[in-house]
Amino acid sequence: MKKITIAIDGFSSTGKSTLAKQLAQQLGYVYVDTGAMYRAVTLYAMQHEFVSPNHLDAEGLTADLNKITLHFVFNSELGYGEMYLNGVNVEREIRTLEVSSLVSKVAEISAVRTKLVEEQQAMGKEKGVVMDGRDIGTVVFPDAALKIYMTASPATRAQRRFSELQAKGDSVTYEEVLQNVNQRDYIDTHRADSPLVKAEDAIELDNSNLGREDQLQLVMEWVAAKTKSM
Image (tube, rainbow, N blue to C red; front, side):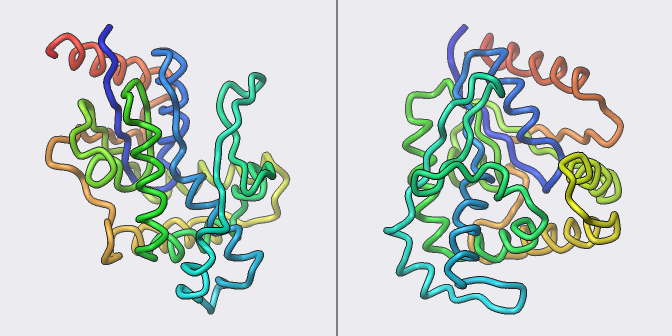
């Protein structure tokens, strides 16, 4: 089967990463979690007091970007690559609600987006890659063979995220998570640089009432149809 580039965009907590990991495993593709990259930069910004709920030092963070090294290290037990920030595994730290509440602010910074888009494009230049994020099909890989735009109701997404955080032992309320989901939706769709929009040639996937396995089967059919037509 001819290898293609698969771009998955969509709102937070729609299961983009889960679907992307499943596809990569099924197809033998490389999976790139761009959200983890933005989360890692956000964690760095938090550690160096460039960002907080009421503060954003975009100039300071921009000046420090050359000090940030990101890479994925494959974990055979998990079946995917974990995020390393300057040589340190930060996979758990970047998944907290605190990071989630600040990542959209950091992602608005043009210099941050420029740096990460360049790295993402380099990762996918050989094709055979599944990449998920907010601007993959519109900015990173506008010529991707298959573009998927994932969505679900805010309430559904908040419940999914709340359950994940509870399972990890995080002390949060559903109301806090729902507020975070709505806040991120607004910032992601209203930022000046590369806002979240559906690419004209993307296939919309509303998984509000769709199970993971049914979703995977459906998308694998799209992949097969796309590769067959090329």
